[in-house]
Length: 428
Image 1 (spheres, rainbow, N blue to C red):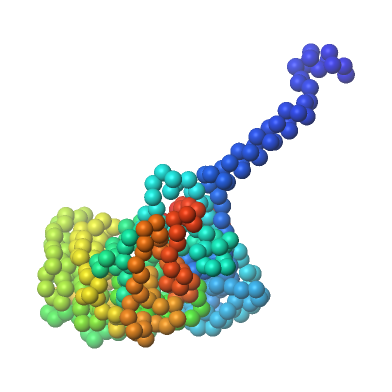
Image 2 (tube, rainbow, N blue to C red):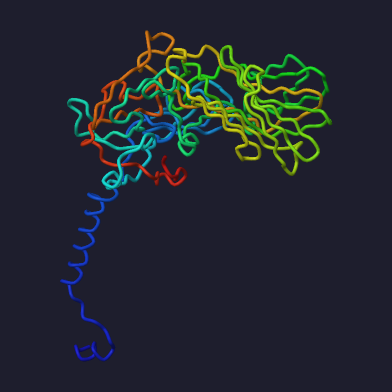
């Protein structure tokens, strides 16, 4: 076939130079995106678990079969673990594969347009002497010019507690108990009255003129199944929720949290077409409201006691939000006890889909639990400096160890976890 034949059939001759130019342009574009817009990073350690996982093993519990992640090393076997569902303590029963850390995308130019914000998951060059070439990922907690205090697991800025945004809090809640797992431990439920516990479901079968209470007695600690060891600090910031069905014209139901000598509870009292909701502290009424819902005798509910606030949801919608300004001087060094409970009166009731969650607990010390430290962690942050903490506070080497991050070390904000596919999510 001649060149003339090519022209007749409309074919373009192959030009090597054009292909080289296109390849070069694509390479330059990719390099530009990496240098100035977005870059992918792999998480090297478990300091941000469970928000972001580093190298880990996927373990199947030998008792209930539930799969969960345990931090890994260079060996072929997972370390000892405690199942987060059935609480079986043991070790993996067979050979398991060591998996690499999560992969995230980081917006590198975002902080050129707007300064970093508290609670961002940010990437920065290590400020540690001898480790300046390493990139770290932490949660930005302390801002320039602030005095940051960690006390009883809480974050205080200039002496006042800091409230986390809803999108951040949602990622930081960690499961303590979930009755929707068939193997969820039920032996920790204790009733001093007529409550019965069957396969994780709670039943008040007898009507009574006195409040009948069932409580979850297992201590709520800063336990991470990822770390493969028990928690050490009692966590007072707790969410308790579920689905309730009430029978009886005068029935009332309550969900609550006991923290040391304080009781916070949400009380639900239905009528024909409305539901009265009360927030009570030590039986004193804090706030109340009346809501019109389709089924006032059967609904989803939750009570969150977190960061000095109390929030009540009905069918997924906030009906009461009580925000309080808590001073660091009015906060104990540590919480001694924390428990969740349900109560009922003047009717029968059935509670299912029970869940108990706890907030992240920022420890004052990486070395020892808070009840053994002499005082809270306090750090004055200079201008042009930030302080980062790991969500996995018991094992995270972070600002509590090496201090602040200079602004010039900040590389960008993590905004999406893109690998593995099973964990794809936005990062807040």
